[in-house]
Length: 358
Image (cartoon, rainbow, N blue to C red; front, top):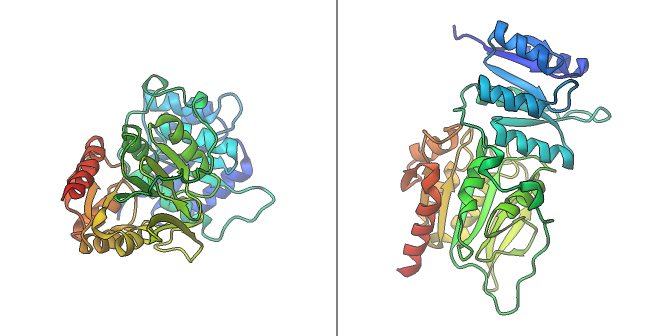
């Protein structure tokens, strides 16, 4: 019999500790080995209990979750799933937690609202993913621009007069570990790159902040996609949480579209939903990129893109936090090449340029 995943719950709220403990202990393959009310209790429990995964609150007395996470990842790296309230401020600190090395996050339901029916399953899935995640060295402030000082507000950008929408398109899909992978992919993009559309599995209230942070770091413009946004060269469009992003060529323009159709592969936004629209409307003018993430979302859509002449790239196992989504696409023979994360941008641009010159 396989050993159970040992989980340490860290939260200053007794109620939340009890709820998480019940959720985790209900799973046949995991168990809570301890529950700590603050970082100092957690530190001692880590030494004595040797957990496989931590769930960690952000706002706690004595030492907040970010400071504890930073110290933990420097001293004894462990897979961590953050617990965050779904607020704008919560979004900021959640992205900082991912930069510091957290594998993933779960939005904490508000006390006056009922948790979604699948909330427990979502936590269990993220704990399983964290257990199998490949931990990376956390990104430090010295590695990045002062994000807080460079985050302009997301603005609607009308198409300038006389400027055509993108001919070539890069379509990207990612899940667990994807926020950092997408950042690395976009930061070096040249200002004249093809238009880019991105699905990152992420709940509502987080995608706008994600786009804002990227917009402050990149040469290109990054925004949360809006319905009927013209897709311009030198721009990237992030699917909003809770809505599918798809693309269409209409009246000589390449447009971003949003949909509230039911989830696909349990996700909305879904990578498959985007990729299938790219196959239908963009065809051989597209380059597909599938990155780190759990599950199979994107594999079938990427196969459809390949059938229509698109060129597809998968992130390799060594640089993926979770190799699930890329592996599924590779096994389905939906990709043309497999590349490490630091080379994916270069390979995608080369593929788009070669096809442009044909």
